[in-house]
Amino acid sequence: MSGSNAIRGARVGSGPMGEKDHGIRAERIEISYWDALGNETVRYFAADVPEEDIPEQIDSPQSGLPAGRDRSNPPQLLRNEPYKTHLAYVKERRTPEEAEELLEQALQKLRARRGQAQPASS
Image 1 (cartoon, rainbow, N blue to C red):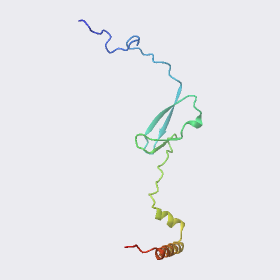
Image 2 (image 1 turned 90 degrees about the vertical axis):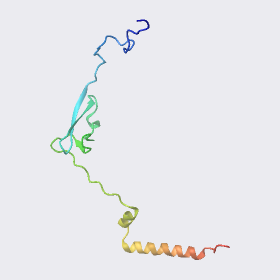
Image 3 (image 1 turned 180 degrees about the vertical axis):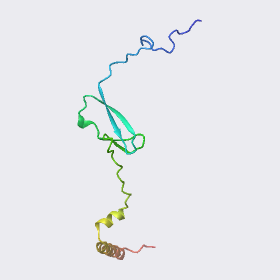
Image 4 (image 1 turned 135 degrees about the horizontal axis):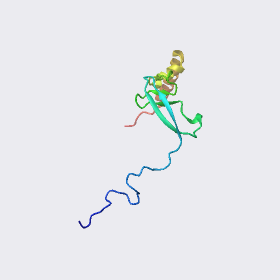
């Protein structure tokens, strides 16, 4: 069979087929995290990483809940506050009396401005 390639599908210079040596594996440590549902997630870190650089919590890929390193006391999901409108934030900062006073001042400015407006020419 002329023109056939005897090494079809093989990389040039790849070495013997089935070569298992792909380099030296770095030393690593295994850290387990648990979520509130009891799901375990394992993360691997380099052995020379300082303890303070390893996170205490991660997001569990199974449940989306926060997962911690203490199996008997997993972190609980923090309750999210609902979205507040601008008016809700203003009401937190102002008493109803202050709001009435500010509204009256704004209306006075608006009335004064409208009273000074030039009539449209025809």
